[in-house]
Image 1 (cartoon, rainbow, N blue to C red):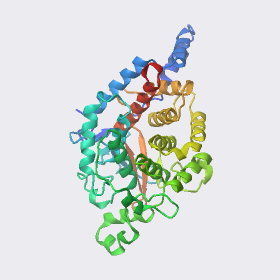
Image 2 (cartoon, helix red, strand yellow; image 1 turned 120 degrees about the vertical axis):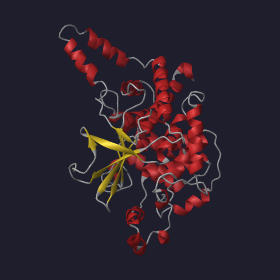
Image 3 (tube, rainbow, N blue to C red; image 1 turned 120 degrees about the horizontal axis):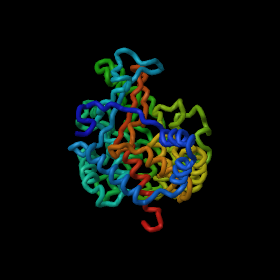
Image 4 (cartoon, rainbow, N blue to C red; image 1 turned 180 degrees about the horizontal axis):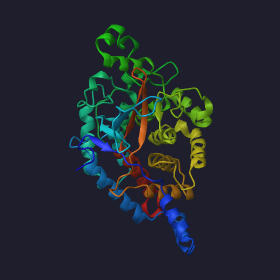
Length: 408
């Protein structure tokens, strides 16, 4: 039975990769240094292709158990009071947060996008079901909402640019065609050349009178009124347009400058999602490099000047154990570096760390992926998904295998 079957998934923390083996080495060192030497030698050697292939198969098996009958890969959410300690009315179990299924298209589009880097026959059933699910969620003229048609919030939120871009890219990666209208999407650009997150014009934002009749609209109105460009929405929109051969030179120049200058270019700007001032707080610092590398791979060659500065910051940010922190960060870092031609010890150490983070059931750990501040209710919605983290890990491992000399 998949872990989401009850509607609640109990997240269990996992020790950081490599900690346990290091402790054993230190204890063993009282008698002999050989165990530590062997462990260090194993980490310094390139990851074995057969080990990576086995990890991929286990990860695919995990996703087969996670995928819902509808084809959806579940996203989960937990709520917490903003800037306050846990309250008695907040649901916990044994001191661990309670995650509930939050039916959405976002997790499925990311997993489907990542699966394109695995051998086609290995994940064919997964991709067929996921593609059918996304096609069923699509609306004219080829757009997607975050919440699915099975979620009560579906019609409360308008379609958005990020889910539309990523869903479209995921389907196209698997040669699934669908009707789309790129010119309709251009209506939602802002004066700086970026894209609005939400596909709603100012005149269509719920009025004060409408909010007074429907309290839920108060939250949505906050989102729409505070809608500003952010680099993750823009970079996937650029990738989507680039896939279709459409250049957006002003947006590409803006993203290239951000890649060149880094997150410290404007510490108060919500545009870079690592900033604490951002509306969407991404937990992984490798997200923007991953998005830029993906857009470049899709055909946005104008991003080339920014690739090496991004890669240099990724290399500098790698931890001594080879990771970039948690599993999603590590997977994104590896995938981005491989896309821009990186090889050697940085990649090999990263793959070792990612393999060490795989769980006994074949998946990778539950992690916070996004946090959304809801000012209207003074709460924070935290989103996570083992399916998404596992998909990202499989993408990184699949790219690594394809770059091995005998796999090319």
